[in-house]
Image 1 (cartoon, rainbow, N blue to C red):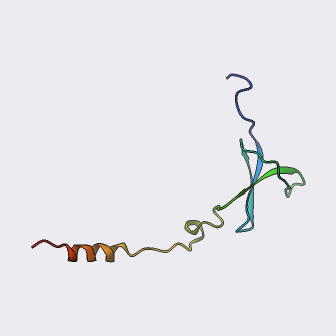
Image 2 (image 1 turned 90 degrees about the vertical axis):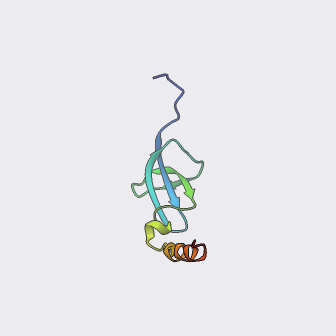
Image 3 (image 1 turned 45 degrees about the vertical axis):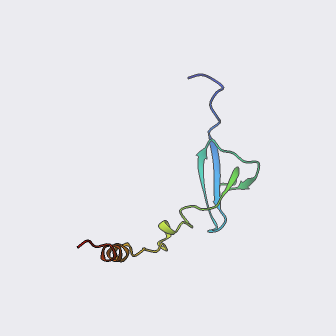
Length: 81
């Protein structure tokens, strides 16, 4: 592997402010803002708009669209014969 061409891979905290949820992981992204984590260390923090804690698919608040009714209505309207 060539040296000095790869980004640094460090610990980073991703924080979802909407859901008051944060998790520590490793990433090549970084930030000037920092946060003190549960282990007492300070890590860069990246604020995200949506995460698994606030996304409707993961929280179970997603709505199911009645596509069967729409298909049946379309077939009735444009039925041949």
